[in-house]
Length: 261
Image 1 (cartoon, helix red, strand yellow):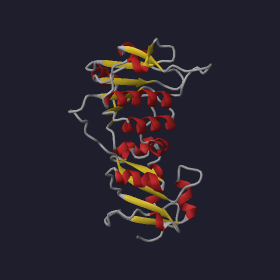
Image 2 (cartoon, helix red, strand yellow):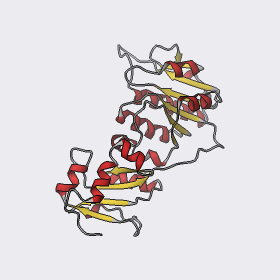
Image 3 (cartoon, one colour):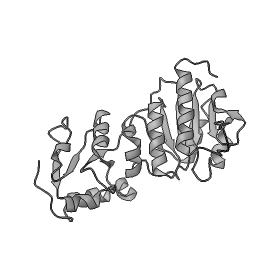
Image 4 (tube, one colour):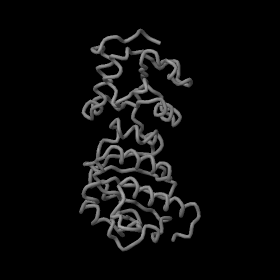
């Protein structure tokens, strides 16, 4: 372990602090910050190799056992570590990790999740995690969605960035992609078609809209079907992450051998 960092103006801390902003991440040649013991472990378990690990002084036991020896580990005084953390009660470890550029599996039947103007970091991270767990082949973010490498998104996604290809595409490229698929389903609370009445075994996309205004008119125009999740009582709607999870796991169920209904 290298020398103790004891100054807030240390260049290493200045760099990590900058990576917490979208602008600086774009300028940093493809790295982002993963914070928390479990998040760092999950990223490494999925194949990520950090380029730097910071631990709060006294929390050196949090350094992952499988960390390659070539990765620099810096201990940081608490008065310097805590202010650069993005959480109220930091666990005491963060890592600078290369942004993955996973290849799309061209041999699998496409199951694409399109995150259309999803702006809540917690919802976006949960949707990425769910998409990876349900076996989606690609996650596409439209331009007005929150940055997928936002620290809150990264925490909620719990390693999903290393497990599913993520693309931030302009509208024209998203449109071209969706036109190649047999099913393009938009989620809408007032739709007539139930989510489990769709044959998800076909090449398909699930479009999840923004929390405030739903799916955009541009995505609606590309849809082959609008779907809803039936609900009991007087509940009006589910949040974006929950609705996306219900539909994604129905698609996963059908693809495991269900009857398509």
